[in-house]
Structure formats: C-alpha cells, structure tokens
Length: 193
Image (cartoon, rainbow, N blue to C red; front, top):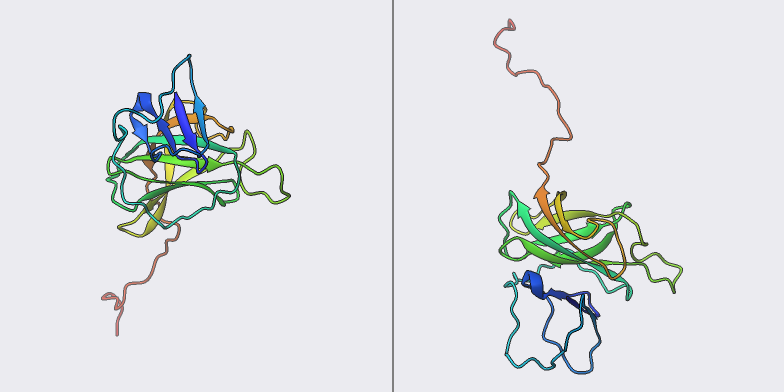
C-alpha cells in the first residue's frame, strides 16, 4: 500500500515511512493497493505513524514540474551521520536536479523524482526508463557528495518509472583528489648557497 499527494510526498504504512502531511478534504491523492481494502477518512486515531522528520533543508529547491513522479525511499546511508537540514537530490544524466527529499536524523529520505510533462516542449524531468544519480547535501560541512547505490530492497533502483516506488540503501562515495602535484622543497638543505 502506498499513498501520494500532488507534491510527491508519500506514505508506506508497511515500512513505517511517511513524509505525507495529514490528508485534507478537497485534496487529491493517489492510493495504490495490493489487495481490496476499506479507506476510512478521517482516521479515528489522531496523528500518523511515521519516522520523525528532520528540519527541512533548503539547499536544493525544486518546483513541482509535472503530475508525473516516482517515489524513492532511501532506507539508510552507510558511513554517514545525518544532521538537520541534510538533503538528497536526484540528478539526470546532464546533472540537472529532477528530485529532492529531506534526510531524517536516522538517515532515511523520501525523494520525489519528477517525470517530464508531456504537454510542454521543455524537458522538466525524466522520461520513462531514464537513469538518475543521487547526491547528498551535508548541511554541516556545506558540501555535496555523490551517493553510491548500496542495495535495492524493492523496485528497479535508480531508473525512472512514473508512479513507481523503489527502496534503496546508499553509501557516501569517498572523495578522491582530482588534482595533485609535486613541488620542490624550499629551502633545500642540500643545495649550496
């Protein structure tokens, strides 16, 4: 079972994940079920079970470009301690931001990856079957770091499919130096003066 709103926020009751705000009368939602069920609205119990959200970051901001999207649950980031304000961004092959989600204090993130709007000539998101990459915004260090796919728990990983869902785990890629050089020692004690 999965519930999504028009902003791409989603809830997965079986996983205990939700970045979806309380449902409101008059708003539209997509509900995907694997079996027949009864929807009781409003819920009798106040509040929704979910993972506590970190303070929303604002490094990457993205308008809702279309009504096409995919939900990606990052179920943990190996080798990283999350902080309030951290974000995960999804990028297409050209390096354009196509999705973003805030990281919880537990290192989880619900990332909405946006698809292209077929009614416009401009390309605002991903086409079906397109691959994307993830980057982590470390709000404490003020750095962006590539994330490597550690494992796929469900779905097709980092391949865009409209209205699909995938659960992954990720690892922070270690930064490798891009420049290096040798210099002479100064003063050189072996040179005669």
